[in-house]
Image 1 (spheres, rainbow, N blue to C red):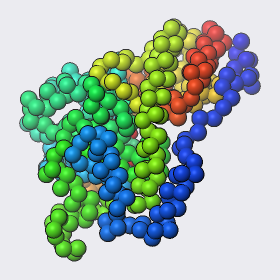
Image 2 (image 1 turned 30 degrees about the vertical axis):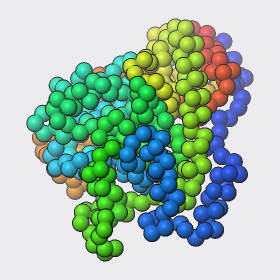
Image 3 (image 1 turned 120 degrees about the vertical axis):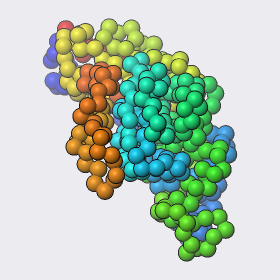
Image 4 (image 1 turned 135 degrees about the vertical axis):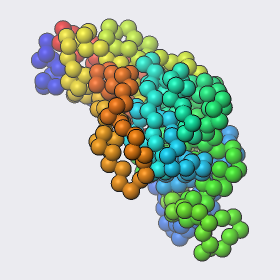
Length: 404
Ligand SMILES: *Cc1c(COP(=O)(O)O)cnc(C)c1O
């Protein structure tokens, strides 16, 4: 009965909001305290910044952690500090946020797209080696949605070909691979604190590493090329002001107290949701068990098969499900290389070699994910109750019954 669907005016399956960010008086007080202290800035009075970096490094069990303005810049600092040269190639997945690719272009390097695994939507480690050339310098695996990439395989290929590994862990705060925090396995790991992310101060970023040389260079690049022991107006490298503020960090220091519990809740709800959705014909949760010991579920993704829904398109299905009160949408509409930026090579002043032609790139698994399969539910919904998870399944079944 199509009339019963909420999109046609019927009753909604879920009648509640899933708030984000989560905050209370303690966050307000933390921010107010910084305002009253007058110690807003960084680097000259960055005591909170330093203490948060130490706390985050300890949390990830790495030697160093370095805050910056956002996750894109975290990736940018890591890549440039890896000493890439113009024309060097960097392997990335095409199923990720645009920043994973633009920071490569901004370093005058060439993004080389390697397709994703159809069961995890992470970089397909078995396809990396084929894409490696003499010019390849780095791999940026994205722990998509908060699920760990196959890091053993990726680190092995990187070691064999002497490549740097920069983990894009912007979805993976507190998530783990074989007991290790995401971001702590490669040469550097990058996080975003943008407002949608699992740990947020509105904007902000972090890069972690165990490598002192990398850390010193990233620190310099973040701080207009200044170096340890140098004068204030002495600049050694082409950096910029990429510093975070004390206000952002005050909020982050308070927010991180909730992260562990929130991450476990998402992990638990995600695991449960998998178990009930996999029983619905035409709905396939992504595969787990590649080595992730904690999945942070920045996004809960399931694969939709229209043939089991009377050929209803993914876009229409997502709209119906959203109308039922499940905060969901279709995710990326196309692979990154299909964006006008790549198709038209609108690279402006960046020196990308002429032979590069993204109209010839084809990553069929990513195309299927974008055009046909993937449906996203964002992380705040995953902080709901077990009953909310049951209701998500119920809403999907309701739509299926109505359209068949
Ligand atoms: C959010 C995000 C980034 C960029 O972070 P910003 O803080 O928005 O700059 C990079 N990679 C992925 C996978 C992201 O989701």
